Image (cartoon, rainbow, N blue to C red; front, side, top):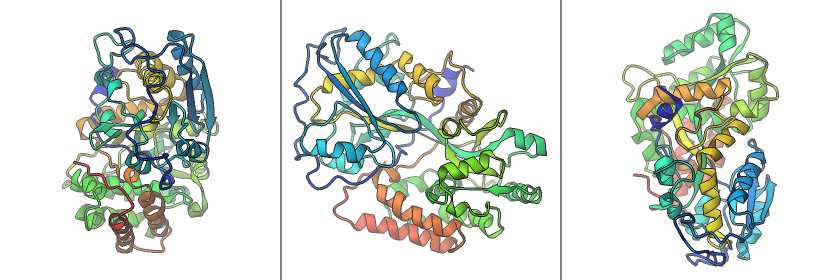
Length: 470
């Protein structure tokens, strides 16, 4: 099986998992019109120019300068310029998307392309409810730049379109494909004669061996304890089925107190009460905890598949980081051990009031070309939503394990979306509950009660637009 087959079979058709950020203020988009002056630079549509790009129209691109950097974007911009040499591109990068761009949304002068990512991103709930985003549906029906006979939508991995859709409208182009799981070093495990555990009882037995060897079984980002909510919810979904996630996403009453969530919380509490977490983890941020893990101070860490790239500078030679699914609670689990959380992420958008909406859509078509996707993977060691784009690309060790995990997971992949719909719920309320739970200050029942109260508060808040996941 080649990588195209692997990725085409990775039907982890879950919804957006990237976090959102601070809410736009009441009139942050400058009004509630469906669109702005996006036709200002509209050209003539043709077979060669299906989106009607005006060849000399300037294009402004703002990139989040995070773990992926900005060099990949400059390469995509160069590809755009090859086709439209008369177009001047203004490129900028920032770690504060909301702080930098919210004033421009207010006065109606946003850029043409925005990589709305990072802790300081603009909240999608506010953007969507205020109709501040251009509809990307036309992009999906345009022909692929370099995959003959295919529309753009036909070149994407399962779930890529659903991820950025709100009430049936495709508004956010999520570019990367991320896998979330439990990471370990195969070198460490080989040296110690350990084998990754597939069941929870085996995992606890392994933790006991690891601790006896003088290594902490677990560490986590105490400054961002929601990282540990990911394996807890994953365990619950594998136990109770995808409906566990749907109930949480739809803010259903007592969704956080389902049988699946109770079983998962009880299981994960064991690593707390048995002392299987690296001392001091509650005071570490994500980089510090990941570095401690890379240094061999802990055997396991919960993270997404950006981990390898983010830790590149401090990862020892031959460390061979590997992603694996959460262990099964038992034979009664609704999903198999191999089922793993996968989703599209790293959101890009074209503002409705952008001057060059057509150029923004064409820039996305460039990103979603096979050439554009392969270049991204080579530069940042991350998968994209373009199926088969890893062909001919030499992948680092960790990313190879991600591809293998997707192959093994197949159609059993899962995801949740509440953290995108309602940022405050994950970033503030669930985050705080996880901090209390994994530091040992509260037990499973109190943990789930705090999460449920947080969800109920969002459900009761009439100022928050609600979305329904089918």
